[in-house]
Image 1 (spheres, rainbow, N blue to C red):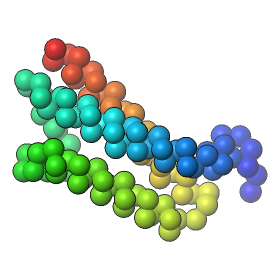
Image 2 (cartoon, helix red, strand yellow):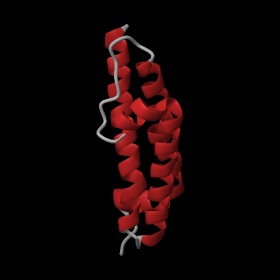
Image 3 (cartoon, rainbow, N blue to C red):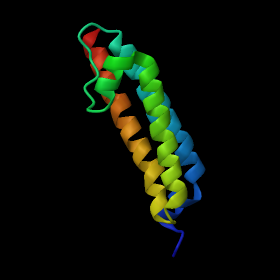
Length: 110
């Protein structure tokens, strides 16, 4: 399999993708969710995160985020190359999207 182009770059930089996943999905989404929940009229609407936040608050969100990242890493360890690059890439994509969405919701609520 050739390691040229975008796919080759992604496979060669998986550790960078994991750092980006932790920063975007773990940190960015957590911070913007926490800030958003402190605003009047903003609630967590995620089908999993919503009930967790309602029941356990911020500590529940920390456990959920940590568990998702740990579980994703465990699956990543089991999936062969080149497919496994999709796991951190997916987390980065979701993390950036929800962080942007949360930021827009915060901006609209202010």
